[in-house]
Image 1 (cartoon, rainbow over the protein chains, first blue to last red):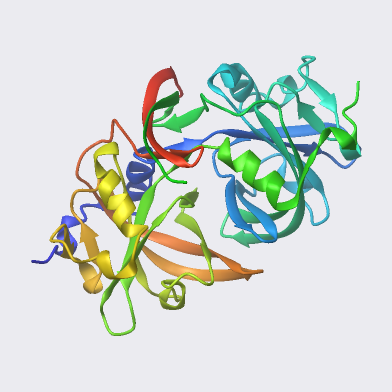
Image 2 (cartoon, rainbow over the protein chains, first blue to last red):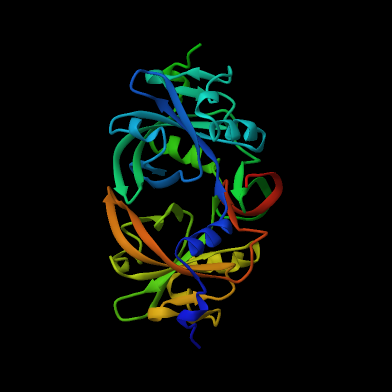
Length: 174
Length: 174
């Protein structure tokens, strides 16, 4: 039995958006510094493991993002994993650029980068390369070191255009 | 106040693995055909939106994966989003290569690619490019068309080395 081409009734951007609304993603915060050492950061749903030997991470970002110009090979960045009780932090770092670093919820870490100390864990990564594709870019990062504040039990998840937390565990995969 | 370098007490692969255990990911199935038209496919936790205009997707894969040699520019592939009740399908496509297409849970779609008709939605994508980094690769795909079987309410999620489903909605982000 075959599925004909006309079964695929959504096209282009509408096809992509419909399918990705059905796809859950973890939410993280990525920080670094700008050219004069001021903190920069944004909420991301595209942080993905790229390999463990050597440890590599990828991140997708629009070239139009305010942080994009500061993401350069050699730059140190911090990836923060978030729990459900970090929702306000996720929203703040997705909001107005001016409001992202006004609270005392971060400390200055290695090479001056801001580290939000309430994140469940923080991974320090260094930019290896960025690959520009249309109006976007894939950023390849090398993982250097990390600190786990707590082993997460209630991660913050994005799905169907809203923030969620995790439901029941269905099966181990050790 | 500063966070010193020695706060980051995990290094290298251990740092990466610890942090990514705290990071939830959606689970999907990616299918295509090999060089002689036989179905190939695998379970993925790295499918990520790369941009909507034009609609692009990225996918991370190890160069050692059996499917990797068949992922070439111009090749059509199908990305399937999965729900909690697709868990057995996710496990099957992550298991033995010989067992992945023995059941009658897929149909033959455009250009001969297998389409699992119980997935919540299916996105047809065409390989634009692959970028090799160490033992891995980033694959850039162009979204062409899609079919949504149902608007997902219970997506399949991977977290802390196990399969989960979604928990409560915390906040809309329209």
